[in-house]
Image (tube, rainbow, N blue to C red; front, side, top):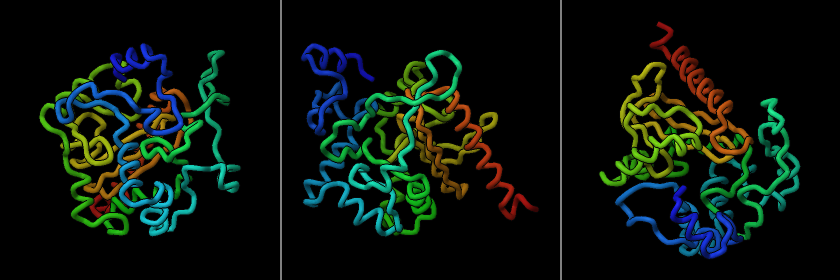
Length: 274
């Protein structure tokens, strides 16, 4: 997302976002000092590498022991080719029909994880949606199966310095950047960053808004989207497999999905029934 890094890689004759290891793929200089701005980055990939160095386990083994097994998860892996049952159930990656019909058609090209020889914690896992939802639900109800309550509270707390917050605000206001995200992010609603995604720091009272203060949200390149709203007692997950990121049709569907989930949740609550 930063033109200076693109020029840097091109000057060195290195294809963008290529390489089979984290260092090969993300070995680029900082474009600003930490805490002074905000940008999409490989920080989670490096956090995964740090976990491996500290524990002596590869990231898949660590996650299986500490995340997946405690929640009864069997259908998440960084290496689907090593799990034939999961591999045969992988959804096709798609793109919009180049002929202009608007249909999603098969995409035969490489994916973001093609060629990787290390677990890339910011991008590399494959999951069945019901199993991924178990993670969101555990964080929603704060059952301490994954994190202690004080750790989870920190995860849902604003993390940005004032300078980083200003950098985030400016970046999200750029149309070319906003177009790469799916889901609705009203410019008048204050946001920050938690230890896992964008953090909504005030109730969304805009027209059609439904998110409560403290809602955490993030999305993924093939137009995946999830949210956890602890105040509303609601989490949701939308699984798409459409490239590129920010597909407009998928974005509209995700917005409808999110609003429908809130409407059903409100209708099911005792207060709503009264």
